[in-house]
Length: 358
Ligand SMILES: *[C@@H]1O[C@H](CO)[C@@H](O)[C@H](O)[C@H]1NC(C)=O
Ligand SMILES: *[C@@H]1O[C@H](CO)[C@@H](O)[C@H](O)[C@H]1NC(C)=O
Ligand SMILES: *[C@@H]1O[C@H](CO)[C@@H](O)[C@H](O)[C@H]1NC(C)=O
Ligand SMILES: *[C@@H]1O[C@H](CO)[C@@H](O)[C@H](O)[C@H]1NC(C)=O
Ligand SMILES: *[C@@H]1O[C@H](CO)[C@@H](O)[C@H](O)[C@H]1NC(C)=O
Ligand SMILES: *[C@@H]1O[C@H](CO)[C@@H](O)[C@H](O)[C@H]1NC(C)=O
Ligand SMILES: *[C@@H]1O[C@H](CO)[C@@H](O)[C@H](O)[C@H]1NC(C)=O
Image (tube, rainbow, N blue to C red; front, side, top):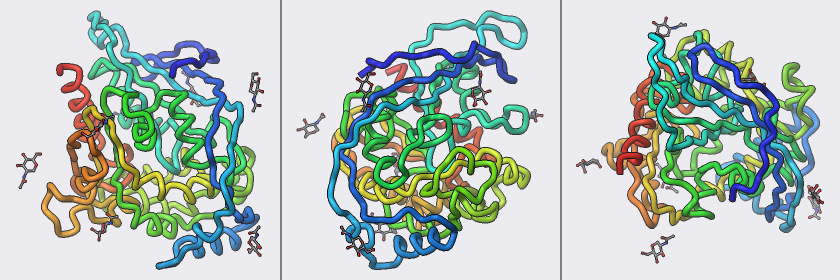
């Protein structure tokens, strides 16, 4: 599983909060059985919107109709990652070096890259990595998913799909949902954030994003081809990612500087990834914002009691373990960008802390 080589491309450097990070480039050879779609790559915003309308039509079967077959995809790619460890000295100069017994592997979601876990905002106050390393003593490894950020990009419809992403996660050792479904013994514990297994609300997200051709976004156009879609404007970003009045309004403009596009192939294949059974045996935590749009349709309780929230209903897919659920009051999908982020970070690290003690 760990047969990859790591090329260190940047020296260790201290960050604002004192924890230390190294950037890595990990070459990987990946293969997967991908779907071949008969879909023409949209070349402008009108074609992007037409495609989104085709995809989201209620009762529609556009995706099924466009499946032409399956094909083995093999390729050599590189994955960009950042490895962080706690500072050895506290602010008072005390030595707080402790053995690192666990690495948290941090995987970002659609629309972001690995900076999601260490947001360069408000002097480093929105950094999950800072909390996990300095406060809780873990090492963290965040990485850009295949197709995104500084990891290799690819053909956005038939190459960059959930299936090849899963193989990338295996090579990288990252515990995302589909990964644990295919390799149940890979991790000691999993925390899934902004998550449920109800795929009914993906159309809300796809329409809410006001998606545009990445080539119309000056910051992203040089790095991505047609077939990658970017969130259309700040209001679309707010609608999909942030709970009402639960965020610093200035973080919207900041989000525009870190937002990443997604590949059409990811949207086409995410549905089949969500609703699969999982035989993972270890502890699982699901942390989701009460008003998450893509995974709860804007209301995780939906009139139900706390224990049968939409994220809690994921239990039916975990055949060999009991999951715990935390619903973050008032929050939207992008938990790390909201005022509640300290309580989100605490829930996750306390969950991992329980595993260490067990
Ligand atoms: C790692 O790479 C990111 C993205 O390019 C950059 O923002 C960051 O400063 C780099 N960190 C180090 C420690 O070099
Ligand atoms: C692909 O879809 C187009 C309609 O957009 C259809 O005319 C064509 O026959 C399809 N090709 C294949 C090989 O299914
Ligand atoms: C990947 O790299 C290896 C080693 O350099 C090479 O043997 C192999 O042919 C490459 N695979 C592809 C699909 O390019
Ligand atoms: C980070 O948050 C704390 C607590 O809210 C605040 O006191 C501090 O000024 C913030 N730091 C920066 C750099 O904004
Ligand atoms: C998704 O949630 C909605 C609202 O609670 C519910 O009606 C629907 O049955 C759920 N679908 C799945 C697949 O769980
Ligand atoms: C809800 O779940 C918690 C923790 O799993 C449990 O302690 C509590 O009794 C449950 N409440 C109900 C009403 O089932
Ligand atoms: C999951 O549980 C089933 C039924 O108890 C068992 O047959 C199976 O071996 C378990 N799988 C794993 C990976 O533990």
